[in-house]
Image (cartoon, rainbow, N blue to C red; front, side, top):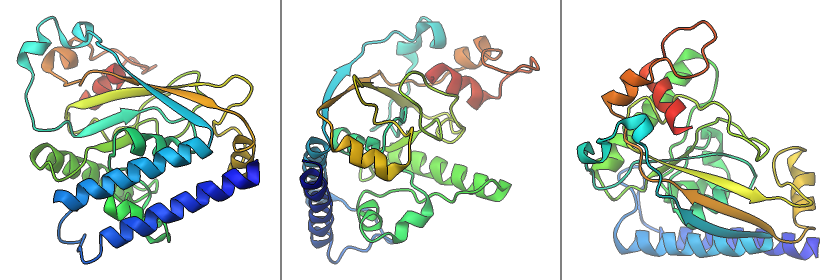
Length: 272
């Protein structure tokens, strides 16, 4: 079964990208994002072909909306003071498997934040342009970190004012985990203090874990040789930071030296 599933998976990916390219003929992505009816058709195609890839990858999805009370973090009256915007700019999720981006594209149709090297990839680059991805410079230098932070902040501002853009999806841990916990979040999605929708995936692993605990190619082969893996996507209410959060929880977190958090650290700690 594995060779057949692998072939169908790759065929679906290639077919999806081909159809998206055809639908986007004549559009200049450097001038403006995809919009109107063409955007709706492209996102419909992406969502359904992602569903096929999930089937062939052995992943079954379910979603659950959680009506969580943020009073402990945002104060008892936080719902009365919410600032309204046309769309929540940022979705923050944990990151477990090599198929997480496909899962997120199927459920939310967001823009992603892949590294800039993928922009020239034959399949993923084209698809990323259609999804209005933010191509992130990667590196440890101060210049690269600032450029990445500025790119996220700029897109957050745009999304809140222009519904042409999809919300951005950020795997805020900056890496993958093994489905048993969530590690400390990175600065990117929190620095601008925009409203965030937290979600978290929980996989029912049973006899096999699709997490990155081995090299990618053997992991793909093993997963396509297994039965069904269930993924439950838990969708939290929007989290909008306020001064109650920053003042009350300024010492919350993991600083061993006892220093106060920066504002983004408090925000990231609360969402985590």
